[in-house]
Image: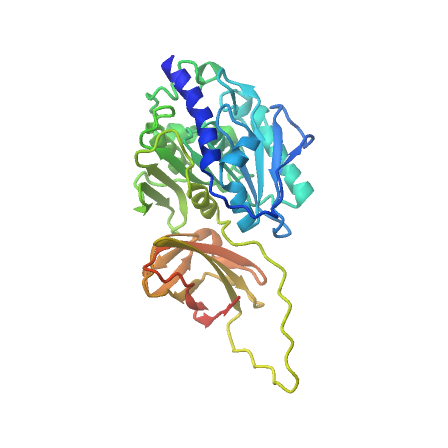
Length: 440
């Protein structure tokens, strides 16, 4: 019984704490949270709120961000950093509100038979309807849809990746559990749950088979998965992080041995599991000393970076400065058919660099390497959507498996995190496959 009361108080306190500690990030002119009362098929009886930033591309990506038990969509909007990141990077955020009573507040249904199969009903179908609505109403890109959430929302994140692998490209689960961890409604907290009781242990293949049975016959690509858990979490036990790792590495056909380990930020111990092409399909963060308190500052940004959404939204071109009379127009330098934009976000002794590579030529690029010079004092500690060698000086970023081709007029987004000693300038001297690129 003590577990039940602690979980209720912990989730409620987390919502308040997050609201008090959220950094001021959104500009005063930003769009506001809007409720949508009729969005389509809604067997879960859910509420939908959506945040559409003022500055966004014509077909913006969609992020579904989900609260913990006892919370709400508007509460997660106020108590997390995703809307501020949407302003910065130009994606839509859907904030569903769960309406299924679980004994200590409303939680997302990850236990019922209906919720455990694609199109079966309950909350997953309602959320899929919200995504479709965002496509119809706001032009949201149905090929770039992502899920994230905390506690019950983290559980639903992994759940959605299993039942809708054709809709969600990736997910970031904070303090979640593997798909099909709960046997039924009676097994969900605050009952005597085997899942969150700390004794759940299945083989990787058993976990993987559960995902494969959620959508029988599906043979398409599987979503990429990012997992976060605090080592001192006793409400949703830390041991479930490993069970989730085993599930999603098995689904991706990967070894249980990570291809790399690092600490991108103090206390964040990360394991990464990449395929034969170097594409990271699963990554797991063990947050040292953290309890049931995630995501904390900076973690939403890491999730958005994992999704590949850290390129700032396009802005209208500035008015050109008139050329004075009798002044010859300079001849532009001869360059390769590529253009690079780079957005730097720096703090204390660290920074992130979000790079977009655009193919401005008429020929398709199949396989690429982007070379650039890193400013003195900067050292790359981790990256996404490419591999980076070496970590300083003259660096070469090579494509991942999923972004090797760049069609004419198309672009790819990559990026890295680095430490610095005071020089936070952007890299210079970009060249794609040996040909110099213009820098926007």
